[in-house]
Structure formats: structure tokens, C-alpha cells
Image (tube, rainbow, N blue to C red; front, side):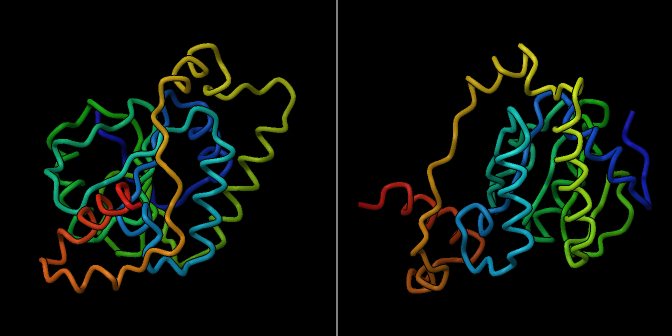
Length: 198
């Protein structure tokens, strides 16, 4: 059954959900993945915190143009961050068609999308970021609490994860404008160039 819509969020329950869900996945859009024009320090800090603190967290790149049905969502919890509105709307429509085959979905965006049945956190409000990171840190420091990623299954899962290479700090999004190709393809083309840069 699809998750119910939530209009308010208990950050402690949210932190518990993220840490105890099997196979957590952080799915990020191209510009966030490759660091283009990402001047939002709060979002960067949140992503870095999640990547460093959540054991066995998988990170997936959400292409700007590949079909939504090529995406694989976690059976536990999936966090969607930095995805353009039009792309995110297509993903949410796709999720409606595969109800019951995925776990909880957390949206971190500022698109003011209508209720979707998923947990939505507006990234323009920094307070939930700080509350969530504090709640996660508190749980991780609690004696007797074991996140899924620290269980034998979680550790085995982490050993099979393919990590992305480091972001290229000197890459400029505007550089791709000189290539004169449709904007929706520029993210992935630049990503390919970045992967093979010498």
C-alpha cells in the first residue's frame, strides 16, 4: 500500500526511519551530483552529513532525461534531493504506477508540489535540516541502538555498493553552454566528460 500523506514530520521518527530502513538510497539530481552552481551550503552540508553518517547508504544519480522506469527505489527508504521539478513530477507519476513495490520516499525540494503521499521537506526552511541531523546524531550515539547499516546484512550490503568518484571542484556548469545542445542533455553529457576528463 502506498505511504499516506504527512503534513508534519516528527524528526525523531524520521531519523529512526532513515537509520533502521533496509537498503537506504540517496538519489540526487545531476547538478547536485556534479556540483554545478550548487551554492546552497545548507543542502551541501546535509548531503555530506547523510553520506558520512548513515551506514550502508547507497547514492544514485537521477539523470535528467532517462526514463523514470529505469530508476530503482529502496524497499526501505529513498531520499530524493536536487531533482528538477519537471523531472521530479515524472518520477512521482511513475511511483503512482508501482505502488507497493517500494518503501518510504522523502522529498527534499522547494517546488511546492501538491500532496503526493510521500514525506516532503521544503529545503528553503533550514530548521528541519538541523533538527534531522541532530536527531540522527543523537540516535547514533545512543547505546543499544543499532542502525540497519551496522547489522551483518547492512555491512554485507555496503561492501557491494559502487561509490561515485569525487566531484570535480573546478567544473563549471556554464562551460556546457558552449556545446550548443539541448539543456536537458547537458547534465549527463557533462557528467560523461567529467568521468573521462584527463
